[in-house]
Image (cartoon, rainbow, N blue to C red; front, top):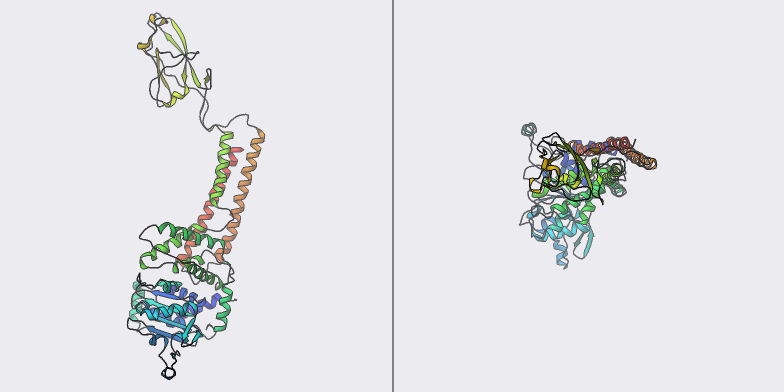
Length: 522
């Protein structure tokens, strides 16, 4: 495998010579061909789809290449070979398959969906089983890669889903976008379908076979499994909308992951990474209507993944939240603690002593009790005496600021009391409950064993997060070294980098929060 990635890059340089804005198409198509996955090129006429196929075939040391433009009047003879008249006279229905699709290792079928059902049905068996029935014989065919092209996806209700599913890789080939590249194209007389390739770079059949076996040995990383499951969940969620109709068969998932594994293998790695998973965006869409949405789902799954650490951020947050709650419950007051008394039960009251003076200068102290639970109300109420009886000649009401107004209730006035001496109730100051301990104040006389236990839990959590940060940082360094892949565009690789940076930031924030917990129990 030494220098395999360098070789692939040199091949791609030759494929892209004098062609503009087709780097991604060539790189993913080459990767697909290397792992013998069929390819569907979707795009309008005149976007170099046939040229891409011809050039791609020429980097392989193949014996036969077949190409045909389909139409509704196409006959099986034009694709699979004419009937042998000599054999027909012997009552044998045999085709002369030399130089036709059944004898080719590489084939390109343009405008595939315009073909007749007879051809398409035979194609399904041919590419699925790599078998072709020629008369009485069932032949093993050498076909390794079938490239098809069309300016449309297969129409619904025509029974083409099974055949379409066999094209693992689906690539959009749009018209040229860059003004500069378009002008360069106009300057050129035309791009040749030839490839200037050093003989040493040519891919031999024997090594092709070896690579195919080695690709299957590549390990699918846990990160890629996480991304796949996230994509499936997103498909299930969006599948409930009529505007999003994507079905991915188990076979397609398996083929798609083969492409991902191949991406790792030809970058000389034994395990896939999150960058390789971006290749899934070329395998899961089905129509032009859902293509952009599928790409968005794949990229978001990669963006949210990060590295597998063995512990999810969700479980980490749950552990930290539980510890945070325990610390606050055990060491701090969860609400303001007032100076209250209890009268004959568990209800709490504020004891109020008011001094009232009359017009003769006589003063009198009055004690009464205000229920604490009235603090949350805004209506008027009566306090009680020390025996729990309502004092109806006093009215109280709490303000929003927490103080309580006190006034005489003329309707409930009791003349047996000294009110007959014209005591003045009009200028009494409001009562403000006294707070002994404010919310979030630390409790006193806390059990030392409890504090020590909370310190140990906090330390353990902090060390766990520190290890996660170290492991992630270590993986990040290795990941950055492996970022160089010819199969994913640089702007897409940035998505994977964003995923890792986001994971690092989230872990760092959680570590800072554990320091806050450490300070609380200090």
